[in-house]
Image (cartoon, rainbow, N blue to C red; front, side, top):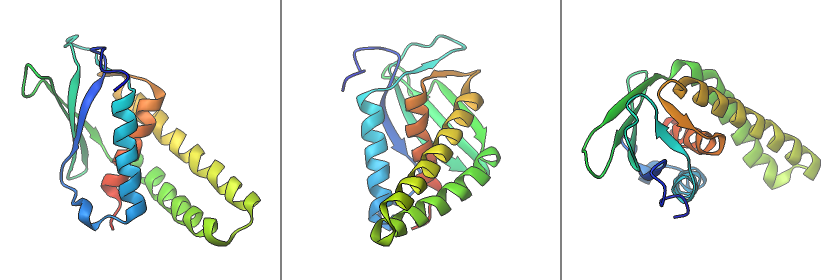
Length: 161
């Protein structure tokens, strides 16, 4: 893993409360790729206490909250960051619709339409990633690529089947 020589990173990710056996293969693949990419290279630092990493992340949803449970090898639990899901709801709804349309378009639409849909999909993904960075900014220093991949995991947590 490219970034694991640094203390400023995530070295493991667990997603709680999701039975991956019921995910569509393409959604499961997105989840696997996002986790792999995060673990290969990421930038993630807890700000407030300057608690040194590297960190283990357990991501879960409870009621209307997204919870980032963080720990280190030295401590079983060092911080729990709780975010409301509400700011993400419309973005996730739009992102889901665009992803479904994109998947359908790949099978039968002209290349130009597929490319336009992909641009829209990426734009929504970027918007959600910027929102995640903003919501975490007081607690975590995170780079945009890590935020994009974490949004993918948040999205997968909310997809049903």
